[in-house]
Amino acid sequence: MIETFVHRFVPGSPGDPRTLLLLHGTGGNEDSMLPLASALAPGAAVLSPRGRVLERGMPRFFRRLAEGVFDIPDLIARTGELRHVR
Image 1 (cartoon, rainbow, N blue to C red):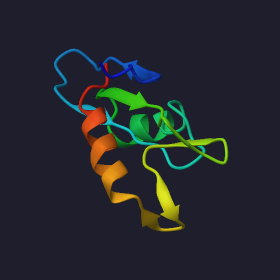
Image 2: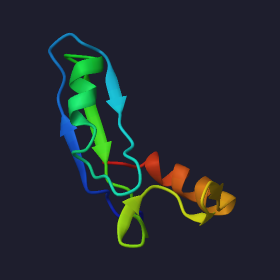
Image 3: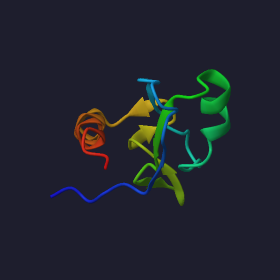
């Protein structure tokens, strides 16, 4: 079983079918992009998980081998984990 992500869920306005999935950058968290969401799509629901990979103590979503070089097997596995955010 996949552990749940630490996350924020902000319900949308009644009748608004949109949901934004917000993925923060390295060192961000589940609150980092909430202001952007309300500016881009007021009334949309928002799901904002915190990345579970730590790089120098900072959360991110995928491991890197070096600056700008993703660990592809990790990228594939962690992308699959995002399907199960709850």
